[in-house]
Length: 257
Length: 271
Image (cartoon, rainbow over all chains, first blue to last red; front, top):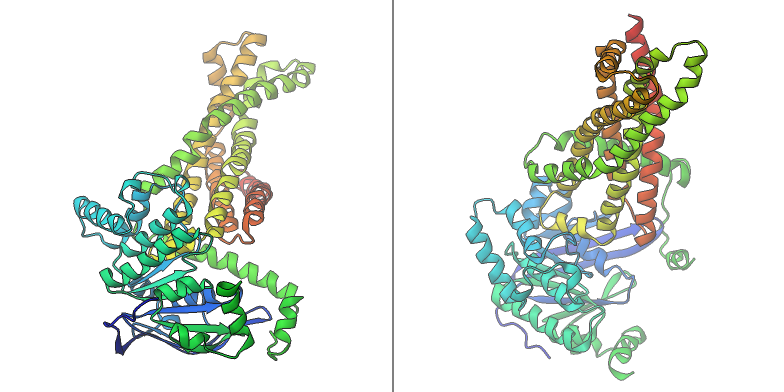
């Protein structure tokens, strides 16, 4: 059970979403979502598969455009930004993909160097090396620096994926199913890493998951996405202290069965 | 079915201008147009990925050499061999070098090079970009504030655009060498006589038009491969489809372009 981070600044919303709607063809995934993320906070978004959790963070990062609603990240409306503006914003928003999305033709070092070379041109080779070593050390995988992604385990790939997003020193981290497909021990390690990132890099994070153990371990606040809208929000206990059958089923499947 | 049931209560309906299918055709055409516009916009805008362009040129050019060498050489031999009986009926086998050089420079070398490039390079580009799309590597580039279009598409299209003409010139060379081998063995023509006849038969327009033509072929092969891969979807099945349709579409377009360029070149010849 996670202690709520005392450094959360409730006066500073780093992400503000109002009335967000998104549909694919005839299927409406998000039906008017409202959400705030405060500075320094770890917010867990729970929900069944296919309920639009990943769509939500892809809209936040500008990979998808909303049909309706307001999406403000660090005070800027994402869908109104120019290409340059969006690129500038993305330097401050890290995105850790569900399947890690490592560049499979590059080594771990090159994976980390790739965004750095293109976005921090003033850095010398030695400074780049130093930052790559620092971040890899932070995720505990310095020894994998010259390995190819295909030589890494699922957990190691996740860590390298997180390291690659940290290399640009983001203010916000978006984690898409960080523990999906991992064994329980590796899940615990990834959960610890998410908390560690929050503390060491002072990031605000949205963690998309359907893993309640992960939600309990990393979430300062939990919201539950049901039928395209956030039905419940609060601490982990507040969310699951509910008579709603769907919420109960979710809890029972993870902890009772 | 499940999607429609889920949507039943939302009251939301998408409006189509004509019908879903026709709308999608126009949407696809617009995407192709926008893809081209984006290429021409980004090709001149920094950052320039010189290293990646050189790497792609190596992939497209150098790695195609073995196949091009073998195919070009054999085509030279076979074409000469097959042309001989017809010419010998008129006692005109001494015209073989001229005939072969015209055929190779004007049509065979550009087409064979383009077809090999479409098969080897077009499919590889389609599969590579398709696989990067479905494994979210392209999205990962985008969210790390790197322009994936510049890094992946512009570099590959530039490589095919400049390497296919270079490969065509090489194909001309090896095909003519193959033809010489055959001519030398059968007619005992010396190398100097052969080369003299070859260059007497072709004009500047022949060489120039073939080079221009292959620039267009190379651009087409690169654009088709990149477009199919960049917009691939539906997992591994989509990757296979992207690779396959890159080859089929590129070959189809190359033949159409060959036909059109023939008409344009004939106009120049008539002038």
